[in-house]
Image (spheres, rainbow, N blue to C red):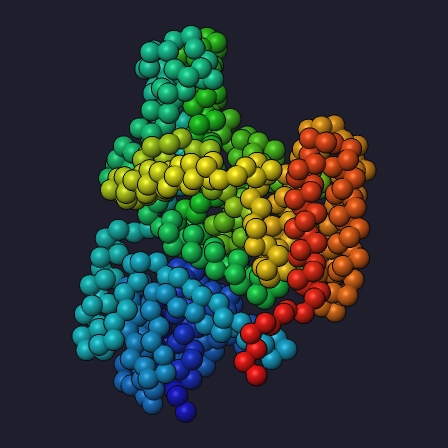
Length: 513
């Protein structure tokens, strides 16, 4: 039967039942949403269980605790203690794992999950109650901290005296290198100095405390969306995970941009002599600027969204999705055209590439981790330099900004198409730099699109003629632009070689019979 005893507890009540042991795996996966109450846990279960019934998951469960094993074992989930006690012959859930979701049409999809590090899993049922009580008491001593009220609410009153006190670059606007360095130092100081209103932690500590968990949970929501063809249910903005949860990458990056924007704006106001001498009035001016920035579309490259809406979406654990066509940046780019043809949603991410260098602005929790990464970067740079030097000693390739794989003809069709798209992208850019008419670029892209359409069965009989037509278009470019002839000749050769190997059967010279 594989049934199991399950008890779920929150601060207000305990519920118990005996049910199929697979339900334990779904309950544990739902803990990735950081629920604090049974109601929040039930809502989180909708991420993984698409019930066609209106009956609540916990309907029929009885009050109380049952720690006696039944059939496949026993499981106790104590939400306030962040404790899972499980003895099961059916499965062995933990902080990391995966479950199968019903995708309809008799199809199951595997979706991984990631729990925050402060969840504790035990297999020993003995003395679990004392452990749960101790963990509950520890968490009660530190009730949830509304860190955002500090990070967003106190930054303006920090900036005013911090900028006013620094006269090393008086008269220099924020765009000057000297002023930029000072503002970077002020920014780093805000991030790294411990604060009493953050319980002795620094803003940086708070930003990164649960960042790893948020990154993985968002990654798995992207995976789930891709596999199921639709978004997972969002968290409620009334949930504890929303109000007190960790900071994801999008919010950390946008918070960096906000702080630097406010620093720059107030610094330039000081330089222009327009800042109020009243700190309270200057702070109010910055607070208005903060709110305007957060709620203005177009202040960042956010596809027309406001920073506040992007942060809001991440806090309810919904990825930023778009179609392949919406993701295209350059419609003349063959790589972009291939991306637009891909099925399913695309997801865009902010990565912090424009943030200042240095430990204070990194995503590493400790300086030791950051220093280890710097050593890895140095070693990586050394290896790249060696490869570049070795390549320079080889016969020159006509391609400068793309890599022409000499074995692309033997690669799987999709990989070969990406190799050709890389070369065609470089050729397209060369034509744009040379002022070529748009119809020349369009002809190349149409020809390549036709090749992509027939590269797989059942259309491979057309591959030879279609490749020849593309080679004609490539050759015409070489004739019209002699400086590009070396590239066009190489691209023609590789295209014909690819078509020949796809169409002609392989030759076997050493058949042993």
